[in-house]
Length: 235
Length: 235
DNA sequence: GGTGGGGTGTGATATATTTCACACCCTGCT
DNA sequence: AGCAGGGTGTGAAATATATCACACCCCACC
Image (tube, rainbow over all chains, first blue to last red; front, side, top):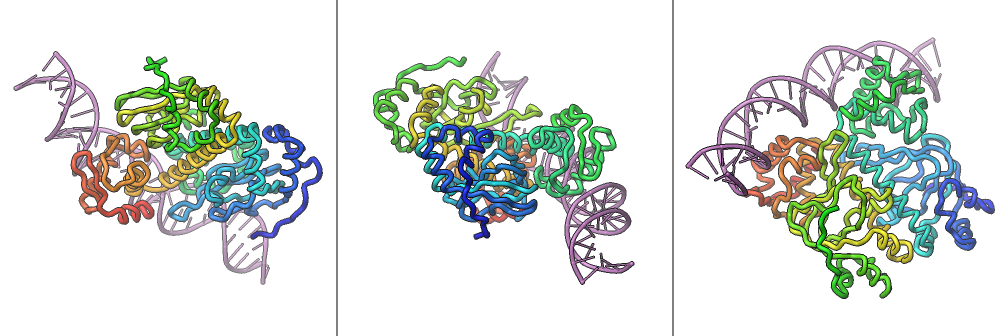
């Protein structure tokens, strides 16, 4: 059991989250109270772990602020990064229905502000509020689709296509900007797409030499997104 | 719009499905009527298509009997098989929340008996019945997890491990038996795991020559599941 | 009976990717 | 300052896989 900074959510704390997640809008006053009484806020530093694959699921985590990587230790004991989670999302929703065990691990890629919700209270809400349940269902479903989609497309490609894919993923999905600070090491990027750190580095070097991207330290600037798009599609 | 054999479900038709899907148990009499009035049965022959990626989602399909492959045409116009669906499952649940468009295509691997449910009626049930919503949510969620799990593990492996994986998938998940009729061609099997038909054939030949499996025509018998298990983990 | 299409099995070659080796650059620590 | 650890960049060799080529089989169809 990790040490927790137990602290009651301030009044209206959940309401403040509204903008991030519309399901909360559907809650009655008493349901919001239930949520608040079974939640607590927490701040974590970059590099800290939020939860570990295989550990019992005690909380659903709502990511108020920060950036998190979701990863998985596979059969061959290699860590595979599954995706990057932005603020305004829940972590570990899929574990709600899987015998109370976490399927993935989560690690902070930046300083975090999270809200931990007792899993039983959360389930209770899903059971008693239709709209809430529907929104959660929609969220899980969309999530699952986009994940499958990404996996399918990624592993049909070869190195350059894969790396182009990851860069576009960062730019479009994670940061919404063609210029961003790389949140992962080469090895970690490789682990998202199933290639080695060397192959990743070589692809990046090639993209830079072709003028598609510019890297200065960890800052990456996509100069020609269309070229990357083409590479991502054709190979 | 494909030609449909419109036919009302017989009285208690949905109740007969109970064993296959427990969410239906939670429905009230009037909700069951709603389901029945918005469903119709259909029979399809092996090889027929049930729905196509990109087409509008008009129905949720409940597979009463038969075997279906779920596949996806990727960015490079190659068909990738995602999974094999057994009887007692819904097809296309994920499309409920995705702008009404099918994400995957479905093709019958055996003669089918299905129940087509109007998508709006289905959504209505999810909205108005908590237990039903919860069961659907759990189902989508588990589905998504096992899918991700399979993808992650498969694409971390190389040829022999992948092929071993597929064989164990057939034996354990699809047929529940170490002897079964191969439902896919070599090329199709390859498309589940991202390798060519030649590589698939060579791996099978190797497994046979090592005595792990025996093939007689399309009938496959796994003699040494433990060996395949080992290969799947280490190779 | 012949013919075309598609599935299958299997070698030889071509290609992509990993593995290995080494050098360089940080950063934190002593 | 010197050192260890970890990230990075990049060539050469080793390896895995795809591609190509060809032969065989089966089956539907003329």
